[in-house]
Length: 608
Ligand code: M6R
Image (tube, helix red, strand yellow):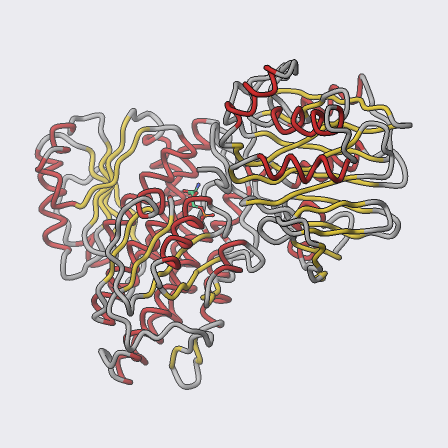
């Protein structure tokens, strides 16, 4: 998703802006740009493609000026070319924007009628022209013009604006998309997140929803949507300590896959007391004992984590669960119950659909809980209770360690819910806690299969389509496996409940179609293996992922197998996620795709 940097600095800021933009690269983008003000004059450089293209341009045509804004654009309105790249400029302002201006068409028509000319196809340019109109036609001050424009635009966005002729003025606004202020020593910064600001300062103030800000090098003014002056707390960000490098790995995704034993253990330590073998939850208004229904919602990988947890909440806690992807849930007429709870899962905590679904559930009287990785995020701030996951920053666009940490947190929450509802006794809680405590070690053992999985991936890389099948808790994992492969290798893949195969997808089976069968030796093993034999009987290439017993008893004719350590069956997805992720990773590296920033994808989807 788009990234924003703004700097009121002491000397030329363009190189610092580029440095900040590089830290926002992980969000996904397809063009980048910088604008600076020097002695009151504006100049800008923009380039389609990666930041390297912008750097090359800046080398040939450097920008001077101690005030500037920069942007990485993930195209929504208009192609990823130089004209549509931000900053957008008029004769009075330059502006960068993250999000969508929903009423841009109407505003654009209005401004064209007033004689304003547009050079790009973007929704963003309308805001720059609107501010210009208020400055020129209505003779407003910069502050008044910005506020007037904010009152006219609809949608979810973050903005940073420079005013031509003003060497000590930077404005920003947040509605729906995050924006943070960084305070330096005689310097001021704006950034999409604390990671982007980390090289410059750790003194960070997060704008609240609807806030806008007026910055100079020595002052911060913050206003709420009504225009009233407000105070927001300054926090000391730990993003600098957390800022990551690849730690010897070729890609962030590889590093993040290998971090899983450690971050899963960290997540467990937030919930489990190994001495008493019990689970504890953070305090908050989420009463599982009296809850009659739990609604779970999320997007993408986080949705699959939520779907796996449905099996846990239902079987361990006897709690009815309604689950849907957030983009659907937010527009459905869900008959929420009076005593219901709603649980939202999100790595970034900024996903637009998930946040909207949360607000919808709250409007229907649901208590809100969230499993989020970024504690300062919008979803974390709006939830009644946060169930933490200690994944640390996830930079690769394809979610890996966030997924297994989401699962770990959700498993702990479901066990605590089961105890609160009297559905499991102390002995069962202890057994499950012991099983969870084993998980980091089992994931570490699984990660040792990298070389063998890389061999298999070389074959998968030749396929046009791939099927993943699983049953029970491993059915959502099959869908997650397919999503991972699609995202980073661009191979078409689908995840199916194994029992659904003969209701349609079996027609696809031929010698060229790898079918990845996720089948731990559990109560559903034999049924899944029957489905696998149906595939093999039709010439399909079956790759079995199972434990020792499962591989041993699978019968002849397998194309390949990956042996995973034996794990408590309900917790299998946390361990089986590792081979699924490695398979996608090595398939992508075999194909030579951009693993960490796959085409068209954004790390955090802050637009609808
Ligand atoms: O930040 P979130 O967890 O809310 O993001 C949800 C999805 O956009 C995300 O999981 C996406 O599907 C990933 N690219 C999957 O690898």
